Length: 140
Image (cartoon, rainbow, N blue to C red; front, side, top):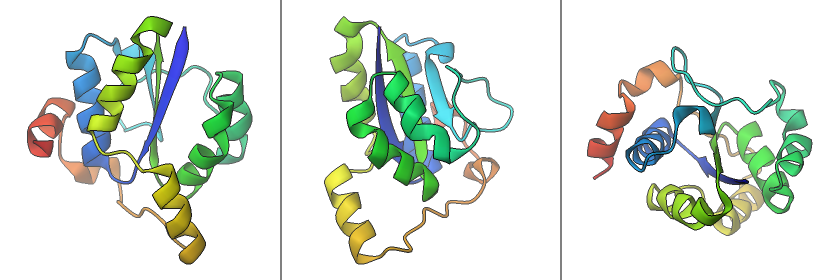
């Protein structure tokens, strides 16, 4: 098994990615959404409730190379999707996540360096007003 991760700066692309994963047959319990949307079941995998524990948790999942970026993204308010999948499915899962416009680590790092106070202030999950299937339609 592998874990594939992506960070999103708003609920719409994150929900579109969740819907696309569901359409591809990925079980809901294999997708951890951090922070978790209210009233929606997502995978857990033991995710820490405190963002300071994210680097260690991500390293334990085998995504250590990306742990620092994703932990910083989460601290800035980004939405993380962590998908557990068979090793052979990882490229397909990564493609699905990439198609939904995640944060680019290089561009985000440049922006954060230029604007250290950058935060992703998208508000509450409830404000998105979309269910995952609707997010896919809205993203197209």
